[in-house]
Image (cartoon, rainbow, N blue to C red; front, side):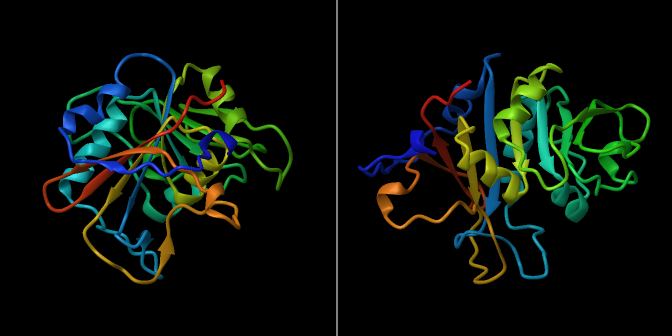
Length: 239
C-alpha cells in the first residue's frame, strides 16, 4: 500500500464535465478500475443485505459505460450468490466484456444467470467443480484457505487476453485490490441517502495514524438524481 501513502492531503476538485471522467479510461493500455456504489455514510446494503437501489438510474448507466470499456468484469463469489447479476452491457451501446467470477471454493451454483447467458464467461477456482458448457476454468494456485494475491490474478487473466479489468464487486474483493495497490482508478458512486447501519463498503487493514491513510487524487462529478461520482486516481502501480 506504500505507493498510495501521502502526508499532505489532496482535496476534491470542483465539479467538472462528466465526459472528462472517461478520458483516462480510453484506449487499449492495461487498466484496472474498481467501482463501488454506496450511501453517504459508506454503506452498501442494510443489515439484511438489501441494496436495491442505493444508486439511481444515472449511476447504473455509468456502470454499464465502464463495462463497455474493458476486456473483463470481475466479481467475487459472494456478489454472484447475493445478487445473481448478469454483468452484461445493456444500458449503453458497446461490446460485451468477459464475465469473470473469483470462486476459489466452488460456491457459485451452476444455475447462476451469468453462466447461462451468451458471451465469454470465466471462473477462477480451485478444485474440480464442474461448470456449464462454455465456461472457461482458470485454476488458481495454492490450496484451500490460501490467500490469493490480486497481482497473481491479474497475471493469470493476462494469459487469456484480459488486460483491461473492471473490479465490480463485492466490497471484499475490491478492498483486496485496493490494499494491494492494484487499482489504477476507483469510481465511488455515492447515493443521496444515509442508511445508518448495515454493511460497510471498503475495509482495509487498520492504521494508527492518518499519515498511513490512502490519499488518491480525486475529482467529483454530480449526476442527475442526486448521485455523485468520486473519481479516485492512484499513482502508477507495479506491473
